Length: 390
Image 1 (cartoon, one colour):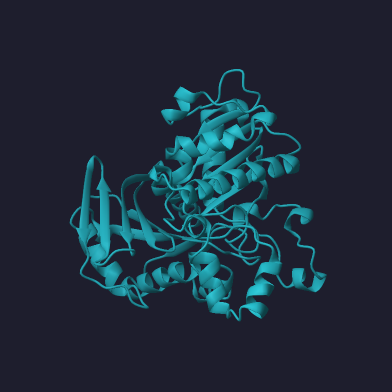
Image 2: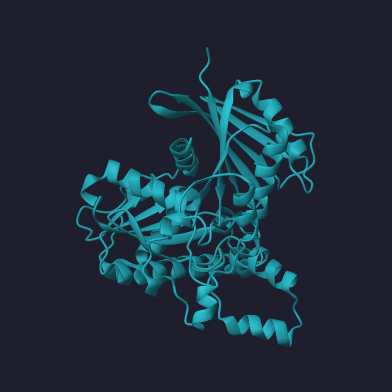
């Protein structure tokens, strides 16, 4: 008799990561992972099962609903796994607002509450909800759960959460929420497991991927983060602007006659590394380019990251360690080195050989601030939280 399976869905703006976990007496054990990539036509579906990797073109076309895409993905998965034995599905949902303080079972009320937050995360929230609705139609009786990126930051002090705007707007929900909480929750636990001496430390984690943010941890608890009301705030990202003077938006609205959709497209899809460089949103392309615009984009990226580390150290009242994670943070030594070079005044000194090798610890022995590279695993957190509910 095969063990029941748990599926996790991590919806990004252009991809959906699928985790496959086998449920046993000791919890959920990962047995495979897949990615549906919506950036290509035809859609690509990649699957990793142990040492084997499969890359398949899907026949289904992405439309307003994802039923056909998921149905075909399930069929492909059934070639390798007992999909009929799936016991539950867990989802990453980016914005939980003030409504969700932790993971939640998904029902009609939960979906309505998530949909009400769509304008605050227009790239991610609709995709996550479409996945939930598609699974409801494909597997009507399957229990589903949601894990929220904002929930990890719910304990922030009022001074951290509040904007300097009229109190009535704050009371309506216009405040700083923070994101990438599933990643930070995993890193907090993994760092304590790997480096017990830093379990109670003041640590800044840099989650650097297409979306990027930083989080100040004290004893594994989030105290502050770079993102705020939406996933636009903080440092520049692949195509998102990061922190921006609100006067720029007033200028674009009144002086350039921008509409809401034009602004959304500019801020979410045309800015960041892509906007500054005019070349690519991918830092790997920019690192390989010899053009000055590429260097300018990367200099701005690393300058803002270092500045945010210093700001978060102020919130913590000190700094014991910096952790780099996510695609850029885990695999691009040049980005880490450029950030560290700006933080030498704080006592951070990298070991060049360790950094080049993506070693777990990349700081020198004499460095006053330790530096680590830790691979994140959001799907593991989704699986664990789903189990906690089911």
